[in-house]
Image 1: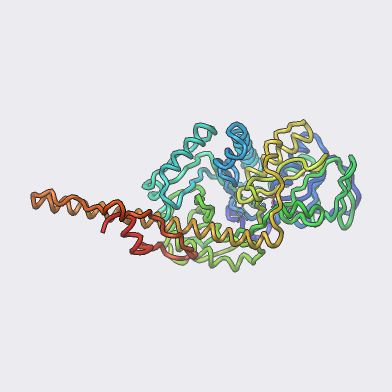
Image 2: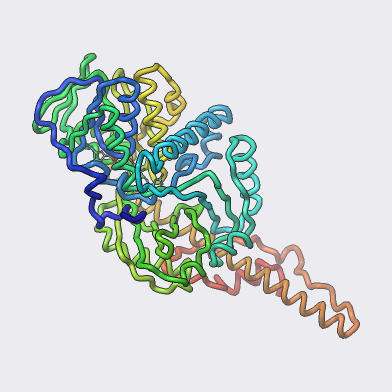
Length: 497
Ligand SMILES: Cc1cc2nc3c(=O)[nH]c(=O)nc-3n(C[C@H](O)[C@H](O)[C@H](O)COP(=O)(O)OP(=O)(O)OC[C@H]3O[C@@H](n4cnc5c(N)ncnc54)[C@H](O)[C@@H]3O)c2cc1C
Protein backbone atom coordinates (compact mmCIF):
# COMPACT_ATOMS: atom_id res chain seq x y z
CA UNK A 1 0.00 0.00 0.00
CA UNK A 2 1.19 3.48 -0.80
CA UNK A 3 2.15 6.25 1.53
CA UNK A 4 -1.21 7.79 0.83
CA UNK A 5 -2.96 5.12 2.83
CA UNK A 6 -3.80 7.73 5.45
CA UNK A 7 -6.96 8.04 3.42
CA UNK A 8 -10.23 6.97 5.01
CA UNK A 9 -11.57 5.76 1.71
CA UNK A 10 -8.68 3.33 1.25
CA UNK A 11 -10.20 1.25 4.01
CA UNK A 12 -8.04 -0.56 6.49
CA UNK A 13 -5.03 -2.38 5.20
CA UNK A 14 -6.08 -5.97 5.86
CA UNK A 15 -2.59 -7.17 6.66
CA UNK A 16 -1.91 -4.26 8.97
CA UNK A 17 -5.28 -4.10 10.71
CA UNK A 18 -6.72 -7.48 11.57
CA UNK A 19 -10.18 -7.28 13.09
CA UNK A 20 -10.16 -7.93 16.80
CA UNK A 21 -12.71 -9.50 19.10
CA UNK A 22 -15.01 -7.55 21.34
CA UNK A 23 -14.65 -8.19 25.08
CA UNK A 24 -17.17 -10.92 25.84
CA UNK A 25 -15.91 -12.16 29.21
CA UNK A 26 -14.96 -10.55 32.52
CA UNK A 27 -11.30 -9.75 32.91
CA UNK A 28 -8.81 -8.62 35.57
CA UNK A 29 -5.73 -6.60 34.56
CA UNK A 30 -3.23 -4.15 36.04
CA UNK A 31 -4.07 -1.39 33.57
CA UNK A 32 -7.14 -0.76 31.44
CA UNK A 33 -6.75 1.75 28.62
CA UNK A 34 -9.87 3.34 27.13
CA UNK A 35 -9.33 4.15 23.44
CA UNK A 36 -7.11 2.63 20.75
CA UNK A 37 -5.80 5.78 19.11
CA UNK A 38 -2.17 6.88 19.17
CA UNK A 39 -2.31 7.84 22.85
CA UNK A 40 -4.01 4.69 24.15
CA UNK A 41 -1.87 2.33 22.10
CA UNK A 42 1.40 3.99 23.10
CA UNK A 43 0.65 3.92 26.83
CA UNK A 44 -0.55 0.30 26.53
CA UNK A 45 2.54 -0.83 24.63
CA UNK A 46 4.93 0.93 26.99
CA UNK A 47 3.21 -0.38 30.14
CA UNK A 48 3.26 -3.94 28.78
CA UNK A 49 6.95 -3.59 27.92
CA UNK A 50 7.55 -2.63 31.54
CA UNK A 51 5.80 -5.79 32.71
CA UNK A 52 2.16 -4.81 33.39
CA UNK A 53 -0.87 -6.78 32.21
CA UNK A 54 -2.81 -4.40 29.96
CA UNK A 55 -6.16 -4.41 28.14
CA UNK A 56 -7.24 -1.76 25.63
CA UNK A 57 -10.98 -1.24 25.13
CA UNK A 58 -11.86 0.47 21.84
CA UNK A 59 -15.44 1.53 21.11
CA UNK A 60 -15.00 1.10 17.34
CA UNK A 61 -11.79 0.01 15.61
CA UNK A 62 -8.11 0.75 16.10
CA UNK A 63 -7.23 4.17 14.62
CA UNK A 64 -10.82 4.82 13.58
CA UNK A 65 -10.66 8.55 14.30
CA UNK A 66 -7.85 11.12 13.92
CA UNK A 67 -5.12 8.59 14.71
CA UNK A 68 -5.76 6.76 11.45
CA UNK A 69 -6.43 9.89 9.38
CA UNK A 70 -3.65 12.39 9.80
CA UNK A 71 -0.77 13.70 7.70
CA UNK A 72 2.01 11.92 9.54
CA UNK A 73 4.25 14.92 10.26
CA UNK A 74 6.35 14.45 13.37
CA UNK A 75 7.86 17.57 14.94
CA UNK A 76 8.95 18.66 18.38
CA UNK A 77 6.76 21.06 20.36
CA UNK A 78 3.09 21.51 21.19
CA UNK A 79 0.04 23.21 19.76
CA UNK A 80 0.79 26.15 22.06
CA UNK A 81 3.62 28.41 20.78
CA UNK A 82 6.76 28.04 22.85
CA UNK A 83 6.72 31.74 23.84
CA UNK A 84 3.33 31.16 25.49
CA UNK A 85 4.61 28.05 27.27
CA UNK A 86 7.54 30.08 28.68
CA UNK A 87 5.17 32.81 29.77
CA UNK A 88 2.99 30.28 31.56
CA UNK A 89 5.55 28.10 33.32
CA UNK A 90 8.88 29.94 33.11
CA UNK A 91 11.97 29.13 31.08
CA UNK A 92 13.24 26.12 33.08
CA UNK A 93 9.98 24.17 33.01
CA UNK A 94 9.36 25.19 29.41
CA UNK A 95 12.77 23.69 28.56
CA UNK A 96 11.82 20.43 30.26
CA UNK A 97 8.46 20.32 28.51
CA UNK A 98 10.14 20.96 25.19
CA UNK A 99 12.66 18.19 25.88
CA UNK A 100 9.76 15.82 26.56
CA UNK A 101 8.16 16.82 23.26
CA UNK A 102 11.43 15.93 21.53
CA UNK A 103 11.49 12.59 23.35
CA UNK A 104 8.00 11.99 21.97
CA UNK A 105 9.24 12.62 18.43
CA UNK A 106 12.26 10.35 19.07
CA UNK A 107 9.89 7.62 20.25
CA UNK A 108 7.96 7.77 16.98
CA UNK A 109 11.22 7.73 15.00
CA UNK A 110 12.45 4.68 16.89
CA UNK A 111 9.11 2.90 16.37
CA UNK A 112 8.43 3.88 12.77
CA UNK A 113 11.27 1.85 11.28
CA UNK A 114 11.05 -0.49 8.33
CA UNK A 115 12.01 -3.36 10.65
CA UNK A 116 9.20 -2.74 13.13
CA UNK A 117 6.53 -1.42 10.75
CA UNK A 118 7.26 -2.52 7.18
CA UNK A 119 6.25 0.03 4.53
CA UNK A 120 6.16 2.95 6.94
CA UNK A 121 8.37 4.96 4.55
CA UNK A 122 9.63 7.80 6.69
CA UNK A 123 10.92 10.92 4.93
CA UNK A 124 12.72 13.89 6.42
CA UNK A 125 12.33 17.60 7.04
CA UNK A 126 9.54 20.06 7.74
CA UNK A 127 9.29 23.74 6.88
CA UNK A 128 7.18 26.11 8.91
CA UNK A 129 6.41 29.09 6.71
CA UNK A 130 5.09 32.47 7.68
CA UNK A 131 2.35 34.13 5.68
CA UNK A 132 3.39 37.53 6.99
CA UNK A 133 6.69 39.34 6.61
CA UNK A 134 8.18 38.87 10.08
CA UNK A 135 11.95 38.57 9.76
CA UNK A 136 12.65 39.92 13.26
CA UNK A 137 10.18 37.61 14.97
CA UNK A 138 11.69 34.70 13.06
CA UNK A 139 15.20 35.48 14.27
CA UNK A 140 14.06 35.67 17.87
CA UNK A 141 12.21 32.34 17.53
CA UNK A 142 15.24 30.74 15.94
CA UNK A 143 17.36 31.92 18.86
CA UNK A 144 14.89 30.54 21.38
CA UNK A 145 14.62 27.16 19.69
CA UNK A 146 18.28 26.79 18.77
CA UNK A 147 19.99 28.28 21.82
CA UNK A 148 17.54 27.86 24.69
CA UNK A 149 15.90 24.62 23.57
CA UNK A 150 18.75 22.84 21.78
CA UNK A 151 16.69 22.12 18.69
CA UNK A 152 18.21 21.89 15.25
CA UNK A 153 16.58 24.63 13.19
CA UNK A 154 17.56 26.74 10.19
CA UNK A 155 16.16 30.14 9.32
CA UNK A 156 15.22 30.48 5.66
CA UNK A 157 15.00 33.88 4.02
CA UNK A 158 12.08 34.70 1.77
CA UNK A 159 14.04 33.95 -1.43
CA UNK A 160 15.00 30.51 -0.21
CA UNK A 161 11.43 29.67 0.82
CA UNK A 162 10.17 30.83 -2.55
CA UNK A 163 12.81 28.91 -4.45
CA UNK A 164 11.19 25.68 -3.24
CA UNK A 165 7.58 26.86 -2.79
CA UNK A 166 6.70 28.93 -5.82
CA UNK A 167 4.07 31.17 -4.32
CA UNK A 168 4.04 34.76 -3.18
CA UNK A 169 2.02 33.82 -0.11
CA UNK A 170 4.89 32.70 2.04
CA UNK A 171 7.70 34.77 3.46
CA UNK A 172 10.31 33.49 5.88
CA UNK A 173 10.53 29.94 7.12
CA UNK A 174 11.95 27.78 9.88
CA UNK A 175 13.33 24.51 8.63
CA UNK A 176 13.39 21.53 11.01
CA UNK A 177 15.85 19.03 9.49
CA UNK A 178 15.09 16.46 12.22
CA UNK A 179 11.32 16.53 11.67
CA UNK A 180 9.97 13.71 9.55
CA UNK A 181 6.83 12.18 8.13
CA UNK A 182 5.36 8.73 8.16
CA UNK A 183 2.39 6.91 6.75
CA UNK A 184 -0.20 7.70 9.42
CA UNK A 185 -2.48 4.73 8.96
CA UNK A 186 0.39 2.26 8.85
CA UNK A 187 1.77 3.78 12.02
CA UNK A 188 -1.35 3.36 14.16
CA UNK A 189 -1.89 -0.22 12.98
CA UNK A 190 1.81 -0.96 13.39
CA UNK A 191 1.64 0.40 16.93
CA UNK A 192 -1.34 -1.88 17.67
CA UNK A 193 0.59 -4.87 16.33
CA UNK A 194 3.64 -3.96 18.44
CA UNK A 195 1.46 -3.52 21.53
CA UNK A 196 -0.08 -6.95 20.94
CA UNK A 197 3.40 -8.40 20.54
CA UNK A 198 4.35 -6.86 23.90
CA UNK A 199 1.37 -8.68 25.49
CA UNK A 200 -1.43 -6.09 25.31
CA UNK A 201 -4.94 -7.43 24.69
CA UNK A 202 -6.91 -5.12 22.39
CA UNK A 203 -10.70 -5.42 22.16
CA UNK A 204 -12.59 -3.62 19.41
CA UNK A 205 -16.32 -2.74 19.25
CA UNK A 206 -16.13 -2.52 23.04
CA UNK A 207 -17.28 0.90 24.23
CA UNK A 208 -16.74 1.68 27.90
CA UNK A 209 -20.11 2.87 29.17
CA UNK A 210 -19.33 3.52 32.82
CA UNK A 211 -16.51 3.47 35.31
CA UNK A 212 -16.54 3.08 39.06
CA UNK A 213 -13.20 4.57 40.01
CA UNK A 214 -13.61 4.47 43.77
CA UNK A 215 -11.42 1.91 45.54
CA UNK A 216 -8.10 0.37 44.62
CA UNK A 217 -9.57 -2.02 42.06
CA UNK A 218 -11.60 0.05 39.65
CA UNK A 219 -14.53 -1.39 37.69
CA UNK A 220 -15.07 -0.74 34.00
CA UNK A 221 -18.40 -1.63 32.41
CA UNK A 222 -18.91 -2.41 28.71
CA UNK A 223 -22.16 -3.61 27.08
CA UNK A 224 -20.96 -7.21 27.09
CA UNK A 225 -18.52 -7.61 29.97
CA UNK A 226 -16.84 -6.06 33.00
CA UNK A 227 -13.23 -5.48 33.70
CA UNK A 228 -11.29 -4.72 36.87
CA UNK A 229 -8.00 -2.81 36.97
CA UNK A 230 -5.73 -0.93 39.38
CA UNK A 231 -5.19 1.83 36.86
CA UNK A 232 -7.41 3.24 34.15
CA UNK A 233 -6.02 5.45 31.39
CA UNK A 234 -8.63 7.59 29.64
CA UNK A 235 -7.38 8.05 26.08
CA UNK A 236 -10.74 8.49 24.36
CA UNK A 237 -10.17 12.01 23.04
CA UNK A 238 -13.42 13.86 22.29
CA UNK A 239 -15.48 10.68 22.03
CA UNK A 240 -14.98 9.56 25.63
CA UNK A 241 -18.56 10.55 26.48
CA UNK A 242 -20.53 8.80 29.20
CA UNK A 243 -17.72 7.36 31.37
CA UNK A 244 -16.48 10.84 32.25
CA UNK A 245 -18.57 13.50 30.57
CA UNK A 246 -16.93 16.28 32.56
CA UNK A 247 -13.59 15.33 31.03
CA UNK A 248 -14.97 15.36 27.44
CA UNK A 249 -16.37 18.81 28.16
CA UNK A 250 -12.87 20.16 28.66
CA UNK A 251 -12.12 19.59 24.97
CA UNK A 252 -13.28 21.64 22.03
CA UNK A 253 -13.82 19.13 19.21
CA UNK A 254 -12.48 20.29 15.87
CA UNK A 255 -12.87 18.21 12.72
CA UNK A 256 -9.95 18.65 10.39
CA UNK A 257 -10.08 17.51 6.78
CA UNK A 258 -7.53 16.62 4.17
CA UNK A 259 -7.50 15.66 0.52
CA UNK A 260 -5.21 13.74 -1.74
CA UNK A 261 -4.94 14.85 -5.36
CA UNK A 262 -4.67 12.69 -8.42
CA UNK A 263 -1.13 12.51 -9.87
CA UNK A 264 -0.32 16.04 -11.09
CA UNK A 265 2.74 15.26 -13.21
CA UNK A 266 5.57 17.71 -13.87
CA UNK A 267 3.61 20.81 -12.91
CA UNK A 268 3.67 19.82 -9.23
CA UNK A 269 7.48 19.75 -9.13
CA UNK A 270 7.50 23.16 -10.81
CA UNK A 271 5.32 24.58 -8.03
CA UNK A 272 6.70 22.64 -5.04
CA UNK A 273 10.31 21.53 -4.93
CA UNK A 274 10.36 20.52 -1.25
CA UNK A 275 10.06 16.92 -0.17
CA UNK A 276 9.11 17.40 3.49
CA UNK A 277 5.99 18.79 5.12
CA UNK A 278 5.02 22.43 4.89
CA UNK A 279 3.05 23.97 7.72
CA UNK A 280 1.96 27.56 7.73
CA UNK A 281 2.52 29.43 10.94
CA UNK A 282 -1.15 30.36 11.26
CA UNK A 283 -2.25 26.74 11.33
CA UNK A 284 -4.30 27.10 8.14
CA UNK A 285 -2.46 24.86 5.67
CA UNK A 286 -0.40 21.73 6.07
CA UNK A 287 0.73 19.82 3.01
CA UNK A 288 3.35 17.66 1.38
CA UNK A 289 4.08 15.86 -1.86
CA UNK A 290 3.48 12.10 -1.80
CA UNK A 291 4.07 9.37 -4.35
CA UNK A 292 6.24 11.74 -6.41
CA UNK A 293 3.52 13.90 -7.95
CA UNK A 294 0.45 13.94 -5.71
CA UNK A 295 -0.38 16.52 -3.11
CA UNK A 296 -1.66 15.63 0.36
CA UNK A 297 -3.22 18.75 1.83
CA UNK A 298 -5.03 19.46 5.12
CA UNK A 299 -6.84 22.72 5.60
CA UNK A 300 -10.54 23.10 6.34
CA UNK A 301 -11.89 22.71 9.85
CA UNK A 302 -15.37 22.57 11.36
CA UNK A 303 -16.69 22.19 14.89
CA UNK A 304 -19.25 19.64 13.71
CA UNK A 305 -18.87 16.32 12.02
CA UNK A 306 -19.19 16.91 8.26
CA UNK A 307 -18.67 14.33 5.51
CA UNK A 308 -15.05 14.71 4.36
CA UNK A 309 -16.19 14.40 0.73
CA UNK A 310 -18.05 17.68 1.05
CA UNK A 311 -14.82 19.43 2.05
CA UNK A 312 -12.84 18.28 -1.02
CA UNK A 313 -13.84 21.40 -2.97
CA UNK A 314 -12.61 23.64 -0.12
CA UNK A 315 -9.19 21.96 -0.23
CA UNK A 316 -9.19 22.31 -4.01
CA UNK A 317 -9.89 26.05 -3.71
CA UNK A 318 -7.24 26.44 -1.05
CA UNK A 319 -4.60 24.78 -3.25
CA UNK A 320 -5.56 27.07 -6.14
CA UNK A 321 -5.27 30.09 -3.84
CA UNK A 322 -1.79 29.23 -2.63
CA UNK A 323 -0.49 27.79 -5.90
CA UNK A 324 -2.59 29.41 -8.67
CA UNK A 325 -0.33 27.83 -11.29
CA UNK A 326 -1.74 24.40 -10.33
CA UNK A 327 -5.28 25.50 -11.13
CA UNK A 328 -8.19 23.33 -10.07
CA UNK A 329 -6.50 20.07 -9.15
CA UNK A 330 -8.44 16.79 -9.41
CA UNK A 331 -9.10 15.29 -5.97
CA UNK A 332 -8.73 11.53 -5.64
CA UNK A 333 -9.75 11.19 -2.05
CA UNK A 334 -10.74 13.08 1.08
CA UNK A 335 -10.56 12.14 4.75
CA UNK A 336 -10.72 13.73 8.16
CA UNK A 337 -10.92 13.19 11.88
CA UNK A 338 -11.76 14.99 15.10
CA UNK A 339 -9.05 16.44 17.27
CA UNK A 340 -9.57 17.65 20.83
CA UNK A 341 -8.36 21.18 21.53
CA UNK A 342 -7.92 22.35 25.10
CA UNK A 343 -8.63 25.89 26.24
CA UNK A 344 -4.92 26.43 27.06
CA UNK A 345 -3.60 24.67 23.95
CA UNK A 346 -1.51 22.08 25.83
CA UNK A 347 -2.34 18.37 26.05
CA UNK A 348 -3.98 16.81 29.11
CA UNK A 349 -1.46 14.40 30.60
CA UNK A 350 -1.51 13.19 34.18
CA UNK A 351 -3.29 11.58 37.10
CA UNK A 352 -6.80 12.88 37.92
CA UNK A 353 -7.10 10.84 41.09
CA UNK A 354 -5.34 7.78 42.43
CA UNK A 355 -5.19 5.24 39.60
CA UNK A 356 -7.19 7.36 37.12
CA UNK A 357 -5.09 8.84 34.31
CA UNK A 358 -5.82 11.05 31.35
CA UNK A 359 -4.02 11.28 28.00
CA UNK A 360 -5.91 13.52 25.59
CA UNK A 361 -6.24 16.99 24.07
CA UNK A 362 -3.39 16.48 21.59
CA UNK A 363 -4.92 18.82 19.05
CA UNK A 364 -3.37 19.15 15.61
CA UNK A 365 0.03 17.95 16.80
CA UNK A 366 -0.70 14.52 18.23
CA UNK A 367 2.12 12.28 17.05
CA UNK A 368 4.97 13.43 19.29
CA UNK A 369 2.69 14.57 22.12
CA UNK A 370 0.69 11.34 22.39
CA UNK A 371 3.97 9.40 22.31
CA UNK A 372 5.39 11.46 25.17
CA UNK A 373 2.12 10.99 27.09
CA UNK A 374 2.26 7.22 26.59
CA UNK A 375 5.81 7.00 27.84
CA UNK A 376 5.28 9.34 30.78
CA UNK A 377 2.13 7.64 32.07
CA UNK A 378 3.49 4.10 31.72
CA UNK A 379 6.70 5.10 33.52
CA UNK A 380 4.81 6.91 36.20
CA UNK A 381 2.54 3.94 36.94
CA UNK A 382 5.37 1.42 36.91
CA UNK A 383 8.46 3.37 37.91
CA UNK A 384 7.08 6.34 39.83
CA UNK A 385 8.46 8.84 37.28
CA UNK A 386 6.49 11.97 38.13
CA UNK A 387 7.51 14.27 35.28
CA UNK A 388 3.86 14.36 34.16
CA UNK A 389 3.50 17.01 36.89
CA UNK A 390 5.15 19.46 34.49
CA UNK A 391 1.75 19.53 32.79
CA UNK A 392 -0.18 20.37 35.96
CA UNK A 393 -0.10 24.17 35.44
CA UNK A 394 -2.35 23.48 32.46
CA UNK A 395 -5.52 22.59 34.32
CA UNK A 396 -8.56 20.78 33.01
CA UNK A 397 -10.76 23.69 32.04
CA UNK A 398 -14.32 23.57 30.72
CA UNK A 399 -14.31 24.14 26.96
CA UNK A 400 -17.84 25.52 26.95
CA UNK A 401 -20.14 22.62 25.90
CA UNK A 402 -22.33 23.30 22.86
CA UNK A 403 -22.25 27.10 23.28
CA UNK A 404 -18.48 26.97 23.56
CA UNK A 405 -18.23 24.89 20.42
CA UNK A 406 -20.23 27.42 18.44
CA UNK A 407 -18.17 30.26 19.90
CA UNK A 408 -15.00 28.26 19.23
CA UNK A 409 -16.02 27.89 15.60
CA UNK A 410 -16.47 31.65 15.16
CA UNK A 411 -13.25 32.42 17.02
CA UNK A 412 -11.49 29.91 14.75
CA UNK A 413 -12.98 31.52 11.63
CA UNK A 414 -12.04 34.97 12.87
CA UNK A 415 -8.47 33.93 13.68
CA UNK A 416 -8.06 32.28 10.29
CA UNK A 417 -9.63 35.28 8.54
CA UNK A 418 -7.38 37.68 10.43
CA UNK A 419 -4.33 35.57 9.59
CA UNK A 420 -5.26 35.56 5.89
CA UNK A 421 -5.85 39.30 5.97
CA UNK A 422 -2.45 39.84 7.57
CA UNK A 423 -0.98 37.75 4.75
CA UNK A 424 -2.68 39.89 2.09
CA UNK A 425 -1.32 43.00 3.76
CA UNK A 426 2.20 41.59 3.98
CA UNK A 427 2.16 40.67 0.31
CA UNK A 428 0.79 44.07 -0.59
CA UNK A 429 3.55 45.82 1.37
CA UNK A 430 6.15 43.66 -0.30
CA UNK A 431 4.72 44.60 -3.71
CA UNK A 432 4.68 48.29 -2.80
CA UNK A 433 8.33 48.16 -1.63
CA UNK A 434 9.41 46.45 -4.86
CA UNK A 435 7.48 49.01 -6.95
CA UNK A 436 9.14 51.84 -5.05
CA UNK A 437 12.60 50.32 -5.53
CA UNK A 438 11.95 50.05 -9.27
CA UNK A 439 10.68 53.64 -9.42
CA UNK A 440 13.76 54.94 -7.58
CA UNK A 441 16.06 52.94 -9.85
CA UNK A 442 14.35 54.42 -12.93
CA UNK A 443 14.64 57.91 -11.46
CA UNK A 444 18.32 57.43 -10.63
CA UNK A 445 18.97 56.15 -14.15
CA UNK A 446 17.11 59.08 -15.67
CA UNK A 447 19.05 61.51 -13.47
CA UNK A 448 22.31 59.90 -14.40
CA UNK A 449 21.49 60.27 -18.09
CA UNK A 450 20.35 63.85 -17.57
CA UNK A 451 23.39 64.64 -15.38
CA UNK A 452 21.14 65.87 -12.53
CA UNK A 453 20.65 64.61 -8.98
CA UNK A 454 16.96 65.22 -9.23
CA UNK A 455 14.72 66.61 -6.53
CA UNK A 456 14.98 65.27 -3.01
CA UNK A 457 12.22 62.72 -2.35
CA UNK A 458 9.10 64.46 -1.19
CA UNK A 459 8.10 63.69 2.39
CA UNK A 460 4.81 64.69 3.90
CA UNK A 461 4.88 66.85 7.01
CA UNK A 462 4.95 64.65 10.15
CA UNK A 463 1.36 65.54 11.02
CA UNK A 464 0.19 64.01 7.73
CA UNK A 465 1.66 60.58 8.52
CA UNK A 466 -0.96 58.43 10.11
CA UNK A 467 -0.26 54.93 11.45
CA UNK A 468 -0.66 52.22 8.85
CA UNK A 469 -3.34 49.94 10.20
CA UNK A 470 -5.97 49.11 7.64
CA UNK A 471 -8.50 46.98 9.52
CA UNK A 472 -7.98 43.29 8.73
CA UNK A 473 -10.65 42.13 6.36
CA UNK A 474 -12.05 38.59 6.31
CA UNK A 475 -10.53 36.83 3.33
CA UNK A 476 -12.46 33.96 1.89
CA UNK A 477 -10.90 30.69 0.92
CA UNK A 478 -10.06 30.81 -2.72
CA UNK A 479 -9.70 34.58 -2.85
CA UNK A 480 -6.74 35.76 -4.87
CA UNK A 481 -4.25 38.04 -3.14
CA UNK A 482 -5.19 41.62 -3.81
CA UNK A 483 -2.37 43.80 -5.06
CA UNK A 484 -4.07 46.85 -3.55
CA UNK A 485 -6.14 46.38 -0.40
CA UNK A 486 -7.15 50.00 -0.99
CA UNK A 487 -5.64 53.00 -2.68
CA UNK A 488 -6.01 54.84 0.61
CA UNK A 489 -3.76 52.46 2.49
CA UNK A 490 -1.17 52.55 -0.30
CA UNK A 491 -0.97 56.33 -0.16
CA UNK A 492 -0.69 56.48 3.62
CA UNK A 493 1.61 53.51 4.14
CA UNK A 494 4.34 54.79 1.90
CA UNK A 495 4.10 58.26 3.26
CA UNK A 496 4.33 59.56 -0.31
CA UNK A 497 1.85 61.02 -2.75
C1 LIG B 1 -6.55 15.71 9.00
C2 LIG B 1 -5.62 15.60 10.21
C3 LIG B 1 -4.26 15.76 10.03
C4 LIG B 1 -3.40 15.66 11.14
N1 LIG B 1 -2.06 15.71 10.91
C5 LIG B 1 -1.21 15.54 11.95
C6 LIG B 1 0.18 15.52 11.71
O1 LIG B 1 0.65 15.58 10.58
N2 LIG B 1 1.01 15.40 12.79
C7 LIG B 1 0.53 15.28 14.06
O2 LIG B 1 1.34 15.21 15.00
N3 LIG B 1 -0.79 15.26 14.31
C8 LIG B 1 -1.69 15.37 13.29
N4 LIG B 1 -3.03 15.34 13.52
C9 LIG B 1 -3.51 15.21 14.93
C10 LIG B 1 -3.49 13.75 15.43
O3 LIG B 1 -4.03 12.91 14.46
C11 LIG B 1 -4.30 13.64 16.74
O4 LIG B 1 -3.85 14.58 17.68
C12 LIG B 1 -4.14 12.26 17.38
O5 LIG B 1 -4.44 11.25 16.44
C13 LIG B 1 -5.05 12.11 18.60
O6 LIG B 1 -4.90 10.79 19.09
P1 LIG B 1 -5.80 10.24 20.28
O7 LIG B 1 -5.33 8.88 20.58
O8 LIG B 1 -5.81 11.22 21.40
O9 LIG B 1 -7.31 10.28 19.74
P2 LIG B 1 -8.19 9.39 18.74
O10 LIG B 1 -7.49 9.10 17.48
O11 LIG B 1 -9.50 10.09 18.65
O12 LIG B 1 -8.38 8.01 19.51
C14 LIG B 1 -9.28 7.88 20.58
C15 LIG B 1 -9.98 6.54 20.50
O13 LIG B 1 -10.72 6.34 21.70
C16 LIG B 1 -11.91 5.65 21.39
N5 LIG B 1 -12.90 5.91 22.45
C17 LIG B 1 -13.40 7.10 22.85
N6 LIG B 1 -14.27 6.94 23.86
C18 LIG B 1 -14.33 5.62 24.11
C19 LIG B 1 -15.07 4.83 25.04
N7 LIG B 1 -15.93 5.39 25.92
N8 LIG B 1 -14.90 3.48 25.03
C20 LIG B 1 -14.02 2.91 24.16
N9 LIG B 1 -13.31 3.61 23.25
C21 LIG B 1 -13.45 4.95 23.22
C22 LIG B 1 -12.33 6.25 20.04
O14 LIG B 1 -13.21 5.38 19.34
C23 LIG B 1 -10.99 6.45 19.35
O15 LIG B 1 -10.65 5.37 18.52
C24 LIG B 1 -3.92 15.42 12.45
C25 LIG B 1 -5.30 15.25 12.61
C26 LIG B 1 -6.14 15.33 11.51
C27 LIG B 1 -7.61 15.09 11.72
